[in-house]
Image (tube, chains in turn blue, green):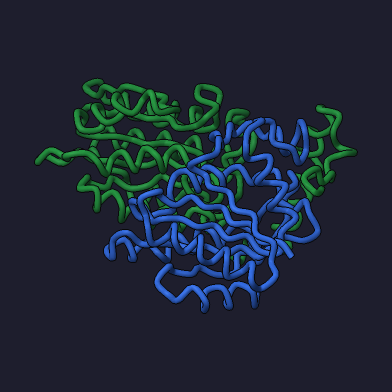
Length: 178
Length: 221
């Protein structure tokens, strides 16, 4: 079974970077296939807001960059881990840009999900989405609820947020039990 | 009063954000002493200009579409730049205008909380957030949601032009009808979804000749 890790953390965030490495090897030991995308080494451009992925070429993003590979890996995974340093109270801009580019995973049609409007899902199954966050400043922890709420309100099968403070083995077990 | 407006929509002048901003501006300049500058910062090259302007103006309005219940990545990037700034002792003010298609305020609630807290953390005054649900196709000015949003945005701009603040009552009134669970219940929502799918999205898909293939799953390998 496949797990995709989209790492949008800062290069200088040693705690997050070592957590991603250790978590990958721990999950490999548990027989998962791990694909890691290091966003700071990839070319992922801003979403154009053109809605082509909804209308002109349904399901396909017209921007031909590294996000194409991330989208393929995303839909083939059992679990997706979005890893990020928390900078200025939110996930990094590069992880947010990658998140914005997930729009092709939705159909144009509206549906009602948990009582509110959302776009209809394009694929039959979606991976469980986990946020792995590293707080560079303790004072940023007041934003945890806002980050979690933003991701959980999108119909992307969000499951949980894990803070990079716990032992890697317990994080890996939590993730593999999803 | 001096106001700098930053439209972060990638569609720039052709965006729903731009249409709504035009109505805000129309109200704001009714007070003849008011002036404004409109900017379209859309990549790194606008970083210096953005940072210079945001401290040079007593009031700033940052406008953008809602992406995934939050700000677009590019807006987050510019908020990261603000963290590097030395804010002058006379703090400039920042307000936000956020528009999106869904009809509930629910989608923007976490963002509103975030923007309120982060603006203060960055040592700016927080003017407030103009949250505009139901703004898809606002440029057509024909549907009820569009007219209501345009009218309220104009009124918020006019009041802001007079008193230098966003009027709380007007901010709360936006799409009030759709926040009423008795009126806007699940049955009505289902009808709205059916109507929008049939007469808006399907028409767009037909026009592009993609209706039949619209459920394809191209990223499955």
